[in-house]
Length: 106
Image 1 (tube, rainbow, N blue to C red):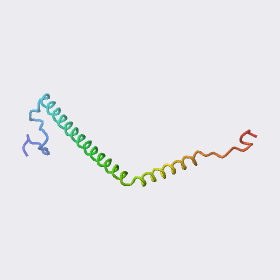
Image 2: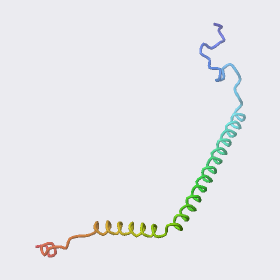
Image 3: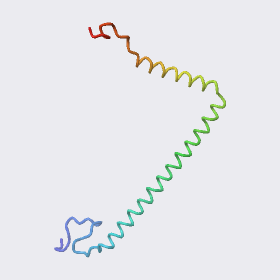
């Protein structure tokens, strides 16, 4: 082994005996990398939004078609849901009538 070689040198890492990249160039490189990553993230968010909007629109169209084809089933289902929720809430808030002892604290 020669005296000026590093025994465990990683080829991707700069060596200490080589000149380093000037700070303004490094800053420009970092700014370019961050800007590129932000543009990719922005595009991914736009694509995700467009996909969700398309899916929501398709679901709305299908729902309107179903309601138009089955109006009585939808009305019966909504009535049943309302009745069920009303009973559950009504029973959960029902308090027994107080006794004379409870009313007057005897």
